Length: 276
Image (cartoon, rainbow, N blue to C red; front, side):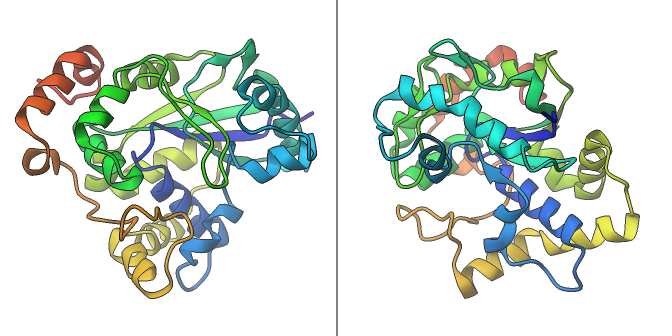
């Protein structure tokens, strides 16, 4: 069994989709941008319901979390059974175990890319995507038992608090993990994505790299979403790719919620450069 999985990990709404679209364009290496609706061909999620149903059969109860988790290792083994050198798998799960099951077993894992974003901006994007209040998001991001219930085509995801999520992925020694800040990806996309390619051991072609950055730019993906829609969009929001900027919290987040976020997550925010 190959340890071929490259985990593309992040707390929700932190830049994971952008990373997958870049990788899809880099490896497709086409003369025109790849459709955003084809990106999952190059990096699917670890919580896609259909994969669990395919493995477990019709008896799977998506509301039975221990049963779903017990199927997870079989799902991961099915992924690596294709014998590919690299399998990109998106995850929003925290680096933890659930019901006694290690969610990220070493034997199938090659390495990880972890995207971290200022939690104050995460609040705005998370609330818009899931149709909930900023206050509710701030509360959820502080809870160690934070999880998403099954919805649409997804099984439960175990998130925990924002601080625990970031610390768990950024400090694991189980396999190599590169932590990349979303804000650095915005400011220096070529440098950031070059580091990602180097981390996974992919050959870096500079012209191809710069082309993939252009083909996955915010202007390009938002244009595609307007013209053809995006299958990962939420029915709570009119757009998936809303602004693609950092620092939106300064105008969009109530001061008392900003203070609460800074108090709750001060240590981890400071470590990753979000507090002076």
